[in-house]
Length: 175
Length: 135
Image 1 (cartoon, each protein chain N blue to C red):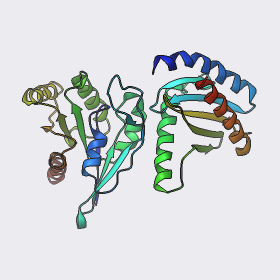
Image 2 (cartoon, chains in turn purple, green):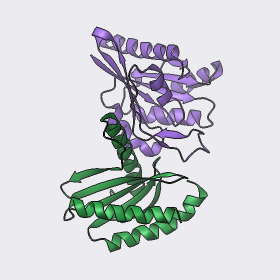
Image 3 (cartoon, rainbow over the protein chains, first blue to last red):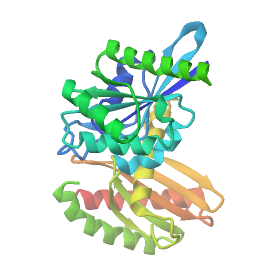
Image 4 (cartoon, rainbow over the protein chains, first blue to last red):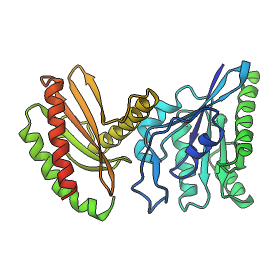
């Protein structure tokens, strides 16, 4: 069984870092020099996709895909998300545009992935950010699990994947 | 984009226009920063209502980035560029590195142009753009 999970979110939210952290293979990256360092101060940015894998032994594999976060790369999003069983939306709450990005990415990606297959992971967040996020979801009539999560933490990311897969199993059993 | 690049983009636009006029069979030329911003182009709009030079610039960057990773995975050495063959012509892209910024140069050719001529034309365009960027 091959499960496909997609990491989504704006530039600098930690998608490449997350895949780097949990992938059991050397991740495939498409990094290019970042000319928008005034926005997010990092030397490179993803321009194609990221790819990693987690081996589940006899149960198969989890394929991890990361999208380029800038909106100009939106043509890549349906290509990468095709067939995904779930999406992990990463957000850095220290970014000024965090909640605007949240709305934008939820709106954009619920066209490709069922809203019940989302997990929201807030980096550099506190309880008030989680409350705000849940409120925004309620306003949109959506329910998604929301966590504080560090994309450098294997433990945090494993929890996100467990939730995503458990939700998928639950949906499968209910259907 | 840096202020320096914004200032250079006008000169580059003129250069790309002159290249597309000079080389028979060259349909369009697009120059993008390696993270997907259009810097300059010639001929990449007006031929079809769907053709958007900004979008083509970003797509060229994703395509070249994926080609770079594919080549690395296949252990075929350092990537210079990538190509697309289609029923109506040929697309060739080339990575272009400067001290300040990295770029992707995309050239589109008519069906009548063979690979040799297209590669030769791309090299001429590459040299001209490289000189302009370093002037």
